[in-house]
Length: 287
Image (cartoon, rainbow, N blue to C red; front, side):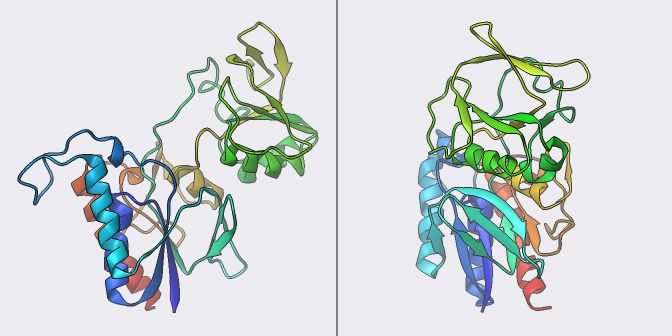
């Protein structure tokens, strides 16, 4: 039977999972770890079918329980990479193993985490990158840094370690939450700025010390839908994944739904996106 992987257990991902599982077309796996944006909502009272307000955490729990009842498989692992195999099938890498699918749905919501570091945004595309797989080639033999403190940052650092002269993880004062193998270095001091006129040249720490780097790769928190999309050439525009009316990206086997595609960031819109994506994936697998 065909295999579908859904990354994200929010309204869009669960909605798609329900349609896919009920169709009997494929085995459905949902990969998710950590707290979703929905769980942080204190009260929701504009969603169809609830006479009284419901917390985001409760709505999230009910969605997952409904999908489990139908037989959807849930795996709690942190996604750190996305590639395509020789047959152009999606291969999802986690902090523990990898999974291959016939179709993939990106439904991890919109990225809400950023670093307020002077120079970081200004030097995007000029030494500040968000994809090690995409840009490692340009930093062969150079000293680079990865901004982050978790498994995602470590994964990006190891990708860069194959070509860069040296790789340093900058935690910006955050506690390191993943094991860092050699030869990657770690600096845990708070950052003040990323420096450079036309391109990245160095970083300045809060204590006034300066460290030279040719590139800074941002890998804060966990990899989001847009981070993963960029790794395989999915079209991204103005911080949203570009999809057609069927929620399909420019790569036929990869779909996206929910907040990561832009528009109104509401539960009702995410549920509708997920339904469209689920039905579209069913049609795609039957081709």
